[in-house]
Image (cartoon, rainbow, N blue to C red):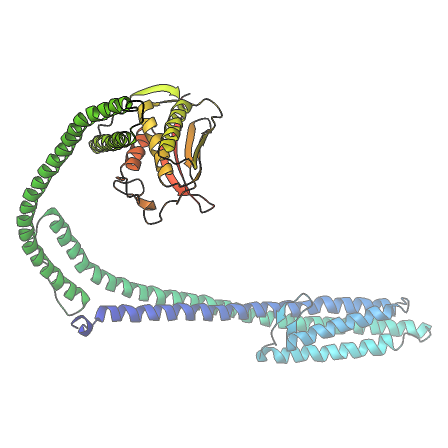
Length: 508
């Protein structure tokens, strides 16, 4: 409410000056454009008045040719010359558009007397031509006729000269008026320039008046940035800058109190943060130790269970189904527990940036074929006979990579495809792109990727499966990126199933 009651004098003054400046500029452009257009119209009128000389001379030439005995077909040319001159004189007085589409304004009133003189001389000239030239074109020539024609020719030339002189007088008057208009235009330009400069100087003065407290505030802000809170701004008046200065001083006081409180809280946060770091380190150490400790009993359990399963395949020549099923359940769950412990260890290595790669040069097709065969056997054992795995190598693809880690990635992607596919064919494909990288893709016909988890698909613990931990894709992503490749996933264009792909550099 206080800010609404502030009398914004500086803003009001600047606003008024800006409005005056805008009005002045628009007015100056309008007035100058008007005078400029008047000068243009005067120039056009001068051209039309000057054209009288040419048209009068042309008419005189046609009349003399007729008087000296030219053929009768000279009459149309003579009439045409008369019409052109008469039209030019009327256009000069009334205005309009010429044949070349030039706009002519009506002749100003101060020049009408001179135009009337031209018009009177034109009518006398026109009447003489009609009477002495055209009407006598059919009379028979005599000796006295030649004398009369010479006299008429002299009088015709005299009248034409008078008409030309009158037109020249009008041209001179129009030229003087145009020169005076040009001088007035220049004076107006100077006046408007002075007015605009004056307004700009006033605006500059007010801007400088505003900048001074802003400069003081900038200096105070820079001091606060350096850590010096013992600064303040002197405030006078009741405009926005004064209120802003008071608010700035109040803000500095608040910062002082805040900094004091913040320092106390920061010290407490440092202690709490250190405690969290210690607990997080203990958690990582515990997970790492637990994963290692889990592997120790799992391996003998898994190995002994497999030995026991082989020895119990037949008991007294008969298959012990119940015993075999129990041992297979132990083996299956032991393998899951073993993979879980291995995933936990891999995540721990990734987060501690200690994931080592044992690179060697090998044919990528061998790794993919091994994984495909393993999971085809597994699918058969699990009763998923409606699922088929298809991979047809096109050419040898040699890479420089960690064989075991790539086997882990391919196996994980195939396992996911089998997990979310009830029936159909899972296509595995590997092909070279641009002779610099290989693209491996696993395309299934299952339920596809849930749009809710797709943006977070390759992060930890993200899964829609009730049996997975959500660590496999996270580990696969980091393994591929450690090799300099990329991994991505998308739903198939036909709306059924998804495709998981990754790229790797090819060994040259």
